[in-house]
Length: 403
Image (cartoon, rainbow, N blue to C red; front, side, top):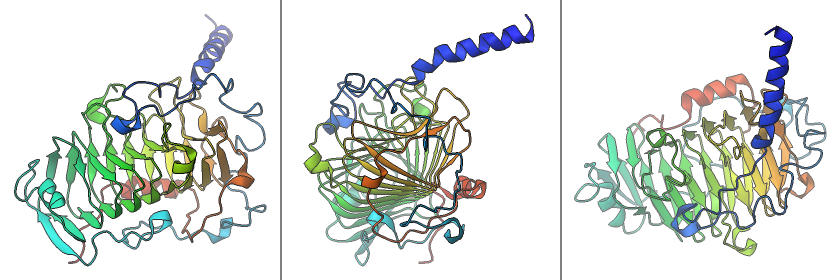
């Protein structure tokens, strides 16, 4: 077989495979999808109302960014290229973003985990469930805590694992109608309960920070549908939340913000800041947003892979608003070309994002209807140096504090 024949056959194979890549996130009707309280995370069948995964001019105008680091000439609400913040890792516990008012258990009792058991004296469960008033929970042990059931977190609490290597497995945390919670330097791995999330944030919970945590499901691969479910779900009107400097790996459905069964009047109050997070070798939902607002800046989203017919980087629908600025989208496989897109009324504004390949599509949808950032943000220039910084510092890398 000569070279020209081989090249023609490869081109035909790629064209035949592309329709599979255009499928939607349509397994959301599974009975056990999106944790026990979440039920159906996509009440509208993906193919009934949207024949095209993208708008008709998907690859026109801003979908593929020819000038990924433009001078911001048309933007009046974000920094120009020469006003980016200095590039440096952040371990400062003065938080920013929508969750900036969270103080956790500051000023309250300080309690210390001394046992890795699920329950009993000195365990995480014992200290959390026994907390009354503001509480800071520290760790004197390293290792895995295999939770035999979901752990409910109360208001006004900080789980501070700085300087430790603490991993929560099998079941995660649930935050129901609580406020003022800070989680730092924890790892979450292999949620083995059907429909389990690493962290569930539900029922109007607010003022929450998840900082320098690590989320991984390597032990569940090859991936079993709905086991586990999301790494983090934020639904039923929860908001004023910042997720920053975290690392997400080896998971399919990563972040769900907004529930398919909740009315827009409830989930419109969702407000989440995602900044300086590293997503790698994950499937989709970075994030998947309905109704609320997400400020997405300085994240690295690369090699989203698990389901060829459903995978994507970032998605907004149902009047959800995503302000996407200075993020880095990298994908080695042209079949997974959907970097960011909107459907069913979703809105996305793209500002100075980087794509590593010209065929990665970043769709902009109704950008004039996307919110303006209501706080100051230290946005870094999206460069290879930013990627390296996140590779080295995102996740549970915080040093022990001076006490």
